[in-house]
Length: 140
Image (cartoon, rainbow, N blue to C red; front, top):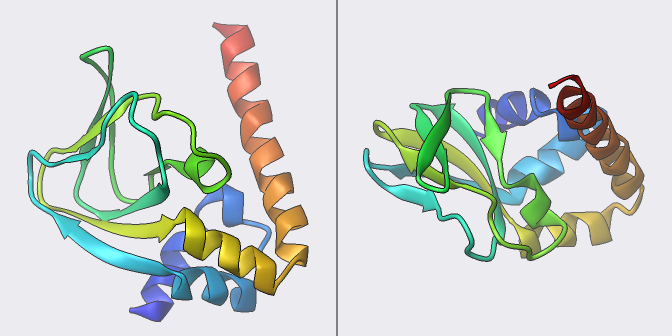
């Protein structure tokens, strides 16, 4: 499963600049969890501590009780929770049995302590994602 986790993680923009060895360290810090349909994976307003990557299945994203999108394999959410403990901006609910790669903040920070150069690479990935979000916000 480690190779499968590395494969999934390599598709995440935040991790796209990491090499295979670095991805292996992040994969080692993660766990695979399967949740049944109808499970709230995260709830809007609650404090976040984990990052989630959907390996299989699907999940609905709701803000203020309104569905805004559906996420499927390869989609991820909660990356900001790896960096801070702010409130979740949406509720994400499994629409079917969903397999998730989960990384906790404590485990993630442990990887950064072990390999400090990872921090810079991750900041570049996060900056890219923020720029994309900003350009979408400006164009709408």
